[in-house]
Image 1 (cartoon, helix red, strand yellow):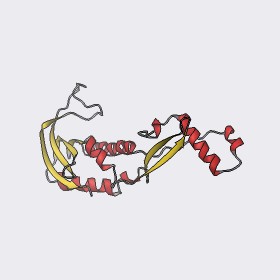
Image 2 (cartoon, helix red, strand yellow):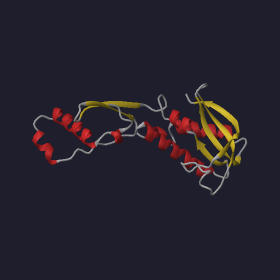
Image 3 (cartoon, helix red, strand yellow):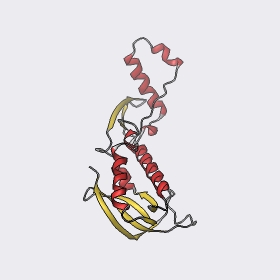
Image 4 (cartoon, helix red, strand yellow):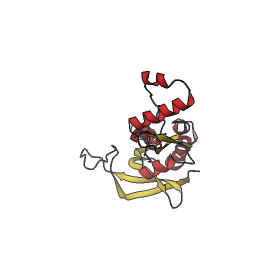
Length: 193
């Protein structure tokens, strides 16, 4: 069985798989296992890395709001691509065990959130492209959208008219403003590799 992330694994199955592994690794402690709980460390999945990347973009957005843009937004496509290989290295582990002895696969970032820190290549490259693309023509009244063009394998920035409103029907679920997609104009493209 394949789970989307570690949180999707039933606790009983995870506990049994870890206990089996501990028993196999350390002979003679089987009787001691009933006296303690196994508390697994849950490393960062690709989905969690995407959430962290979006939080970093939100932080950049807030920092330069009204100066460089009205708001900076990363599309789901851009966020998902940026946190995939080769930009972030992932490991996958297979755990077998549980009541039905099925295999569970879990992917996690090899370096945790480190690749998304400001001084690492992903965020450094994003910030340098913001300077290159956006500083020559500031967009304080526009929503700047970071998107990904899969056909050309390029990231791109678009400038779009904002629709600020207090009407929650026009705001997106993630809290970003809605923007007029038909008004978007491409500012620049850059390679992510």
